[in-house]
Length: 308
Image (cartoon, rainbow, N blue to C red; front, side, top):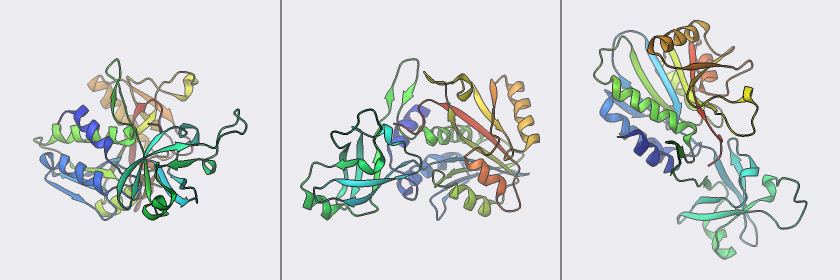
């Protein structure tokens, strides 16, 4: 499957943290042609195993996405909601969303109350979803806890760019899939464990449980970082044309050094990001799992992270 085709399909699927079943099944089927074994664990992480001899190398990119969850339905039919993962309320007003109701997915619009101080940003508590249905019908089909997914279909931009929701981190799942395709007929000197992890956006839980199950000798986390964007300080973002590798307490220095040696050998442009207190990715959970796993982090620069 072409990478762009895979991205268009996988980013369109729902997979909010804790509700990743549908996207997990799709990713598992995508990996099956390239792996000796593929399974979905109880937490909906997908594990594709290419067998070889030598150390067990766990590569992981998360398949879950940020989103919203219904908290209550008001008497007028307005759906109040909270966030699943890091959702900035400033991006929400006038957004389309998909509400997973008792009767199936329905399109809604996020609105903000009229009036007030226009110079102040709305708080999430003041926003609501309108399905366009009578209040009694909304109360009957939307229960507290119903998932609400952000809407952002894949859109081709100029300069061979693609905009859509959930590139964080399904763009990196696509990278793993391409790697599995390239390695399927290789005589590996390791065992490759491609793991599309669940629940990263709410605490790295899929990486933790996956690491306990797989007992890797080396962990390679693959996630996004902030790409260069207009209006941002140069030191806070990274050019899109180079991969990024973090350095900090959660990263094993010898592996970080080795990765840069490999990049130089392959003529791949790479740059370092300093993560002095933590990377906020699966790498943090890999390093601390079991008795500790030597870990390195590869990052894909992404513009406008955690938006659609």
